[in-house]
Each structure stands twice: as structure tokens, then as C-alpha cells.
Image 1 (cartoon, rainbow, N blue to C red):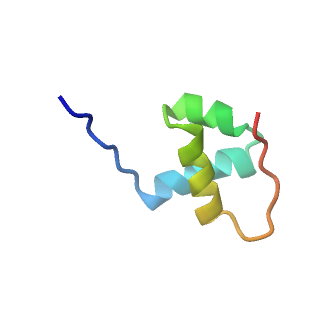
Image 2 (cartoon, one colour):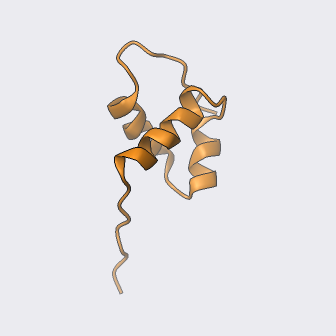
Length: 59
């Protein structure tokens, strides 16, 4: 059987980004908590985090 691709609302994505950008969590912590890959979280950060913001912690 094939896997089912999950979809997320922009609000959900922004909330996940806020956990990293403003909540003091690392990308890895948020990814694990939400069962999403770190790569996905990083893509959302690029999409929703204002240009020039560099508050993201990787690990």
C-alpha cells in the first residue's frame, strides 16, 4: 500500500514556525513533537518567517 500524504493549513504551519522562532524550541524538537520531518519545518520557516530573521535554532 502507498503512503498517504498529509496536508496542513497555513495556520498550522505558522504555529509550528512560531514554536521555533518565538517559542524557544529547536527545529528538531518541533519536528519530533509534531511528527513532521525537520526538512518540512525548515521549508515552512523559509516560507513564513520574515526575510532577515535568523532566530532559528537547529538542534
